[in-house]
Image (tube, rainbow, N blue to C red; front, side, top):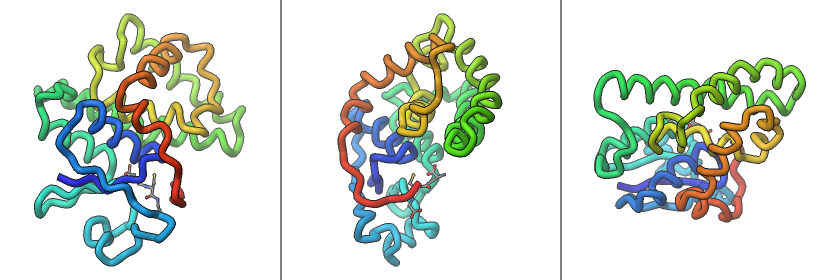
Length: 195
Ligand SMILES: N[C@@H](CCC(=O)N[C@@H](CS)C(=O)NCC(=O)O)C(=O)O
């Protein structure tokens, strides 16, 4: 299994951190965006959109970071990072959809009108903070959901968000940032991608 990744962006970092955290047997290929590796014909056969991350497992090519996360979690059940029962799995999907739509867009919106974005974001942060009450991680135990959300929260734009009124979120972010997978994906310098 081979991951094509550009670890500095949240969508790439979430998958790479997951693989590194659990030491999974997935080869990580660091893409060269500066030389437009993502626009080569070979890469477009893997992801016609030319975006990263993408995963190749034999003759199966998969793109979209959350789909990759759940596929890897399913292929390495020993990580115990994703439930298999229908309700547990639906709960995971709920959080992943929430991350890719509400959470990410709210964070990106802080670029334009931070005050308005913060106002609209508040119910989401209240909800997440309440979810984390009495829990170390979003679903209790560490899993794919934490890996999907945290990279956005701690990315440069995510740091514009004021989490101080939400102490459970602050504590959770500190907890997750210290995990092996996040520490190991911290320092790789960019080579030219646009999110
Ligand atoms: N929704 C996709 C987003 C993929 C995406 O936009 N990737 C960016 C990096 S975060 C990229 O490859 N940008 C390079 C480009 O568009 O040329 C996912 O979650 O995987």
